[in-house]
Image (cartoon, rainbow, N blue to C red):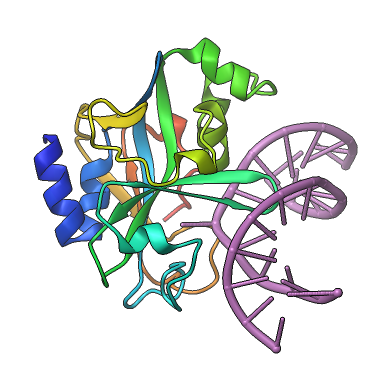
Length: 195
DNA sequence: GTCCGGATTACCT
DNA sequence: GGTAATCCGGACT
């Protein structure tokens, strides 16, 4: 999976792109982590998506090109990192929920001073943003540009992908649009429910 | 394991 | 001016 292939998937189908995004590396300076958990959101048939109701100042990045960072603040204390998908009217995004720290863990602990174990560093969307120092200033970054400060790089594709309902929403819970690397469950934001 | 406060943004009335 | 928001961390049991 190279950048061109991921970008094509982002333009075509946010659900396939979400699966494909698992295993990619999120890189900033000396910090590097492998994405192990994501969620898909899309405007057309998904009331949980910020772009479902209307285009606003907050969500307008989602209406632009695919592969950009959509960063927003919520609950008064947490930044969230999304990757935009689709194009133009078909607004969609992929929320990056958790990653396995690979390099630059000392820098991640600086952003997450209360973390006690490596598993606490990036195991949640707010934690991940804090560990990478992601804020609204990163909104709109082209994550597939190899020269970008914050970017995506190809990594090891998971052998098996698990699905679940998305977390923290009230509508659209019937969709199994949470995707996890089945062999990296120690790094995810919350365990899968028993089934 | 469960509960509960947090403190900002931007959308809406 | 009100409120809801793709949640986290600390304090408990």
